[in-house]
Amino acid sequence: MDLVGLTSYLIKSLVKDSESVSVRGFESENDELVIEVLVSADEIGAVIGKNGKIANSIRTIVQASSYLNGNKRVKINIDSV
Image (cartoon, rainbow, N blue to C red):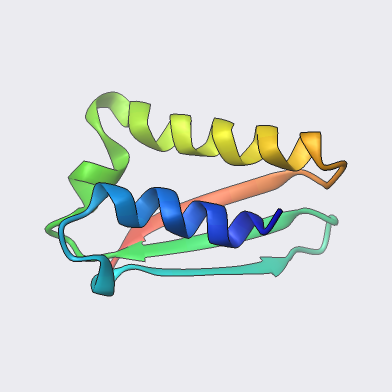
């Protein structure tokens, strides 16, 4: 499964303006997949959630999907534009 696509789908489902979302993935030096999520400053609260619960849930879903497919560790960085 495409983990970047899964992350993009989850994030775009949460925000009002899905065109303002940018998701890209790249390999880090210590052999883990890093997914960078950029959303507008107005939408960052919907993605992070209260006390970071939504962001942690997204990380859990993507990491579980990675483990089920025998892939490596995934790190998701969420930031605003």
